[in-house]
Image (cartoon, rainbow, N blue to C red; front, side, top):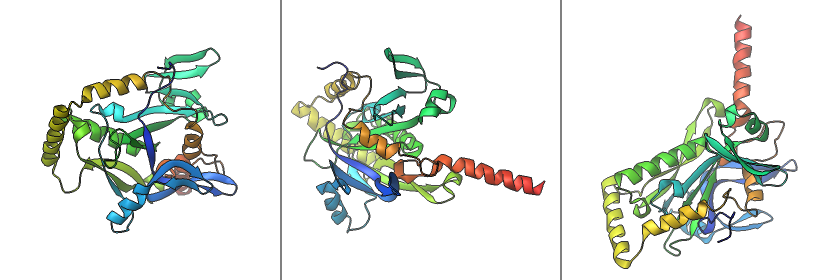
Length: 301
């Protein structure tokens, strides 16, 4: 195995809830209120849709795609969803610093150094470089490829926190049978002060529609028993994935990073940088709200 190269789950497509569009000569993320499944091929107009996208829409009566039946590859929640604070060089598209809130790996003149990670809000280096939470979730859709996955990338705290909690809870209540649980990705909306009360969207993962949690656990146990009888070794698969992720300093490959930077770290428009996942406009809105409050207080005094 090549050292320094992270071995990640095979990806056959992408899951997104937005797209990159060109506005005033700049390519910026645009929010959406539905899922989109794409291949890994880009054309002039953007990512080419995966055949599953149309098939799932037809199965949904042609409406908006807001839920997708999935399962995950691994029993370990942290292998299915990897999330770190990440900062990329916007000129080269290469990762510069990746941390977990305690320690980080940062590229410097002398190579990769391990340093304390106080989180972006408390890190001068991270603030200056646009450090953000960055998560990657791999899921299996359909039965065509048992080990081929679709990847959902996000910089949303809402998506990362919700997905992390759900995966850990499902792992706990199923006695670690997460990889055989019948699950479903769902798109949810919420409004906040920072979004000016307009809806922002995040991704949740729940048990398959029509099933209770108890029924989902029973199905997980049944599938796990079938796999064991056939010789399927889930523990060995988890170990192989864990070793693969640990083989490199950074997960993203050189060919993937430019697309990641374009989608999640776009050029600022009017000095306000846009949030990528689901088109949330949280960045910059806090300052605007604070200025409004200050003006009201000043006018009342």
